[in-house]
Length: 117
Image (tube, rainbow, N blue to C red):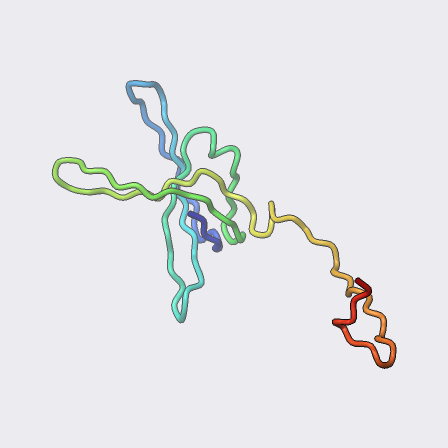
């Protein structure tokens, strides 16, 4: 999935130790313009993705993410895990100005369907 919005808040970096070594998680909140009232969504970046996607409050970003729910002790927890963040408009190919096609005026008595073959 992907969503575009403004970085509302960058939360403190969270680290911990697991059976596979140290882990790091950076959570951030983006504000999405949706109808009359803007909505906020908390997303997370894990490990090396944190350095690959520096976040600054107030900047427009496009976030690519997956949503996953997991059960723990009979309760369900949902996480929106980002796998790429880019500045809004970045990554999109810049198009050159479009030139209008040249259409010469039709000769008198001819029509657009008048083909030579």
